[in-house]
Length: 387
Image (tube, rainbow, N blue to C red):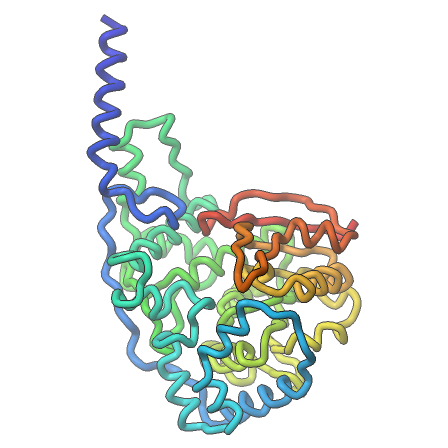
């Protein structure tokens, strides 16, 4: 009888898995999200935007950064820059009306392709490479991952529960969970109303994958013992979301090293999301967030930072450029946090970098930890210390 009961139980479990299989969501997510309907996605109306004084500063800093640039090894970001020709033309001409229009619709078009997980590439169903409902479910996935990473929610284990019970762990009140996460982290998880971002409303809060993903990194740095006033250097800062979360979490000052046109985007978005006084470009007095071009890294002082972070960019650089950064990072800070993929996809005839191999080639590093990144399928989170 017991044997028959076990066999029937296995048969029921197999049938349940077969029944739910069509409802398992995209493999890019960190969990299957079985049976979760995608929440609605909307765009925020126009909100805070860079004023003319900040736009003029952005154009001036872009020109200064461009003037300082030297030749670099080819990378996939050369193509990204060409795709943003209208934005670069407006910067070069210091055309404030055109720049104002670009920043007013920052999350539309292609300006944030490769920098945001919640821009038009994923929010516009006509462009979305992953199909309908992706951005809404991606937001849910990020929220659940952040809750588990911080300990606000327990990690479900299918081996210890039935499939229906496992599915229940993904069906709770997401608005209430978001509110508890904000209380635990000590800062809001609402997406700033700058550039008309795509958002999902959970319990009345308009949030998005970008802020949830980067809130995790701010939390992680605090777990590593970095507190108020910790000096942070970010190599490759996207549109500025990590710097925003770091400041909200009490970390900083933050310095970002990035390409001149990306620094211009960061200056506009952060200047509106924080305040114009909170951002500074090359040649300006350092501020809460200081934005510098790649060539400025060599002039940064030894041990000038408590930690260096890099998220989703070292693999995409030319090998020589990425290796040079690894050698500088070792000089600049005792800790280096890397969150990157290791696929080594071939682009324009060259394979992308793997951070572990770069650290070994650069020398002088001890890897203190390595694990699958909580917030992103296929990404590895590593902590390197100077050896």
